[in-house]
Image 1 (cartoon, rainbow, N blue to C red):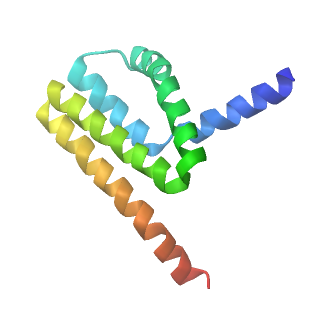
Image 2: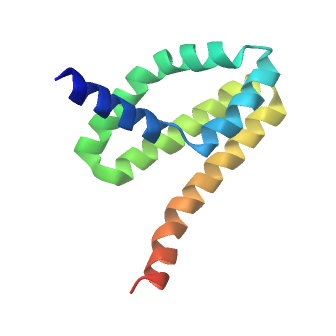
Length: 115
């Protein structure tokens, strides 16, 4: 059981880490004068209920519902960052727009490549 939990948790950890987070961490750190390590540790704890919400929404509404939660969380981050720094909030909002565009474009691109 412990081995399976460790492997499942490690797999989840790799899934959670994404280039968007890598790009946002220095921005958040710079605009809040906070340690990257402290942001990661505290942010991880804050993300637990949000991740559980995502799982519940995905279970009830599927990928469209989960995507809606993703966009909502990105917009919440933009509002919070805007309270710290307008430029950082606007950058976060633009990233959210690219996420939406990527989700829409990915199936079209894949379908044009793989028929």
